[in-house]
Image 1 (cartoon, helix red, strand yellow):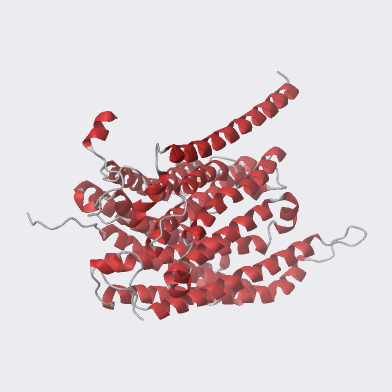
Image 2 (tube, rainbow over the protein chains, first blue to last red):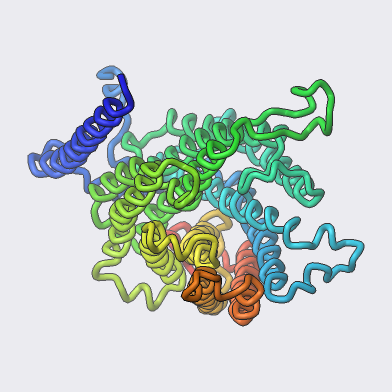
Length: 71
Length: 493
């Protein structure tokens, strides 16, 4: 493989890798907003973790024994 | 066994709060001395010819950078971790003797490293690698300190009650992993005494990399130390302390997640902008420039998220000096993350490279964003860890305005100095002869160097006010009840 081939390969690799990462990024944005909309997961409630952070406060999402078993 | 209600245990947080304040003053004091030395070279020998070895610019410069980075900032990161970590994971360090032991060991070893660093740098023992001046025995000790911190982080996460990790925790984890990776690879070095069979000092070493490779690794490290030391953990702080102090949940949690991944991916590739027009491959320079520009997006994502968190609550900026510190910090974050990418554009860099504009950029980021945010965090923590109100609100306000003026004088003087310098260096006549000699630039820059020194001195005065206010809070602030500590921090007049 000569250096011209390697450069061509690099250029294609670079382009498709960047395109892939852009797709992943937009996919992540879509995932965040669609899960919120469908009600699968309410991301915004996690903002309250900082506000209700006394040790006596109820956790926003508690680690329960069931979680451990499910894992 | 006594039956007390469970409380958060801030023992280790308090220890690191102390080193944050002390090393902040030491680092900035040395910085101010350096600034006066730049303006008035006679200051180099201010303690007499005999002590000139210890007071000259080149001996003190690494002490300044390392004291503010590894002393002040890293202490601030640890102090806030030992506070925020417990609270958002809803678990107390008092619940685990092992984690408490790790925390105290972490602090004890950190202090030892500080002593070793200050001593060795003052004696002129250095690898001569910028921001990585420590010789191999100290490097190994630093790795041990860092690993202990990691064990503490993941140990605390392991016994948490809150299932989801709050966004600040993500940023603290990234700080731990990022610095671990950068520090290890950049400090790969060969102890010369052992490699050569007994020549030279036992503690001396040389970098494992040479020439351009060394520069590349150095700036991959150097720029990402800015990422994982001056950005990521400070964002961790603002994501916790601003919502908590203002009583407003972060404006968009989804945006915080998105900005996190954006920052993680983009930052690592931007370091090449430090080596524009040097011997590194051209594509790498271009990549450094391009990624620096893209970096505006995740940086502004976090900063705008913080400003929008204040939506409908802007009166708090006027009424609370603590909120003022944080809002100014996030504004300076936006400002320096725009300035940096501009400097990374090749044509701008052709003018800016090696000039004081770069120094100005670093300082509007560190003084305006990093230090303001660390001090705001400590101000917020103080009433909660000492169970006393902040000693003086008016002193806080005074400190805010003195330091803001200091930062403004610092970066404006360096802008003018830097651009003047860049223009003079490349000015030439119609035959291509340089129009100015180096000393011409020195003469022209003198007033700006003096303004910079004044700005730095004002900032240092603010640091003393900060230390005094913290000390008085600890010792003589009015005692407060738990109910007063919900959101806005209680402050005395």
